[in-house]
Image (cartoon, rainbow, N blue to C red; front, side):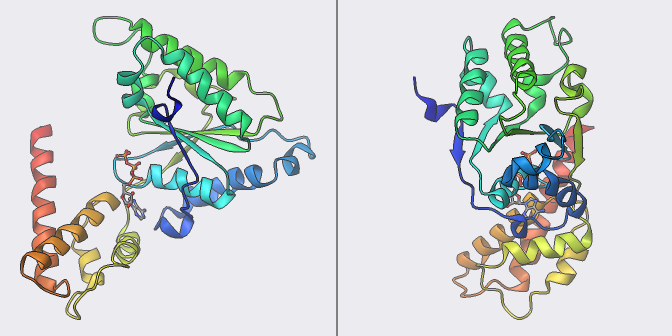
Length: 269
Ligand code: ATP
């Protein structure tokens, strides 16, 4: 069986410096990092380590990036799966794949398991269209029992992300499971500026580009939207054979991304 397709167990090499804004989330996650770096520090004091963390927030605002940064800060391996990919790829074997992943993570502990789009595995049971989905429920049950089955010294932290906390099975949120919820919201103006700075590090900008003004004129943009905008700007500049990205390029790119966002907004109504 090919484990490589199950998850991506990399040392992501990201740190909190790669994540702009989200100061609250970073603050709350410090505890997880401390635990991963020195598990005994907490157990010596008779404390119970935080085992399950749920990152909640809109798409593209850095939940995955944040989880990777926690792994990077702690210097531990990161096992990651996406709920929807998982459900598609492992029809019939979901539960056993969950078991494999936890085993692997425990072998290499301290470590992090990250489950993106938790809602696609973790939707409330028996509430799906057309009744229960046995396959999915078995996978979910396996996940719950893995989380319950941790020995105190196993030192695996499970992080997950969703933008639909409202549809999660309540069993996932009980104590000892994903009992800590951390919000990762859309970036503020200040955070947008910081994100623009991070993502323009390797992009030569002409002197007329004003990131401050750009941050001000992109309310509602996610980090992913801002990254996408700068990339579009680079494509515009390339199209005109420019050596640097100009204000025009950036403004064109901004309009383009804005239009895309508006279209998405329209299709929702
Ligand atoms: P999804 O729910 O769609 O999985 P997400 O919240 O997990 O979204 P990420 O995949 O982490 O979002 O973000 C996408 C990309 O956008 C990141 O890889 C990063 O390049 C950029 N990005 C998003 N938020 C930030 C941020 N706060 N600081 C720096 N870059 C960011």
